[in-house]
Length: 218
Image 1: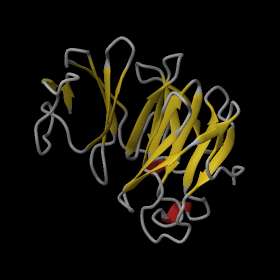
Image 2: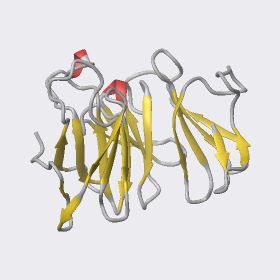
Image 3: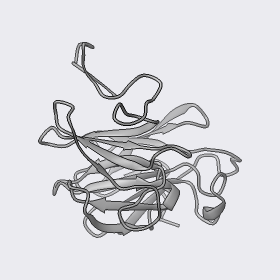
Image 4: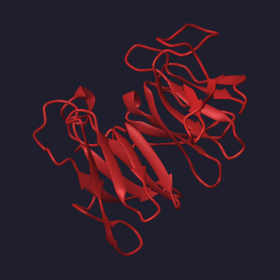
């Protein structure tokens, strides 16, 4: 994991190139999140690798390891994305377990939400939760009845309010957005690993999710 200045100067390195065992870290990190106080959260584990979250201080000192591989509360299977709401709650896209887990910043389990399907990417802006599912149906044998796409919901109660479907409903592999970002105007950007493309879904009007190709949630 590398930290750069705005002009591209390397400031901090966490881990070793090519991966490393403890205490050098990491093996296939998936996402990085910086908390308002500067603490750094790294979700680690892809495929058969470690499934946990590592918390560092802003100067790169390891504070704690959170979770282990499993399906119980506070356990993970491919924690693939991280986001934080205005209350400081940590949202984890626990992809292999087909759920979002919500933790406090010490790793204490708060809640879990399966209604956002099989999450690969996750973003929060203005208390709206955006979750990208790129594997349901075509890749995940235990999640074939769910549609791939981007689900949008309320970060407060977890209600899914809108859905942007995968542009390729007949895909046989990873498709639709895997990474996701949202700009200040509410436009949604989906990074597609399978198609090797990025799509922008433009917000058109209103407060709450009128976007290009927007459909009611399935």
